[in-house]
Length: 124
Image 1: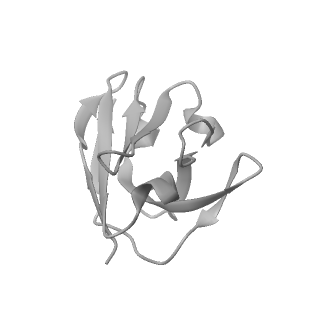
Image 2: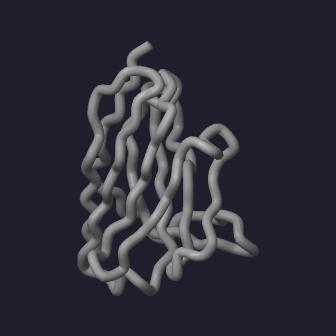
């Protein structure tokens, strides 16, 4: 049974950094592309970043390009999101999920399961 556990969130000042982790279990992790998403209060969940199974292809939403880096460790069944130069508008609950990447671009999530997420709050 798939389980995704996000961690690493917290309160940080604008310009600061955080590193999120998402540990997966119940799946053959290396078989899947993975992605990070976020949901701010009153807004829909949005795509942030994706990485293919071999970590040689990544895709980012324009608003985080150059600031966020997605990576993965297949031996640990974990995907990471390094977030630098954080802005107040990055404040949200962050989630990971399995995704489909087509032609190097995030296409959609795979399945309906979501973990509990991890809260990121950036103060100005």
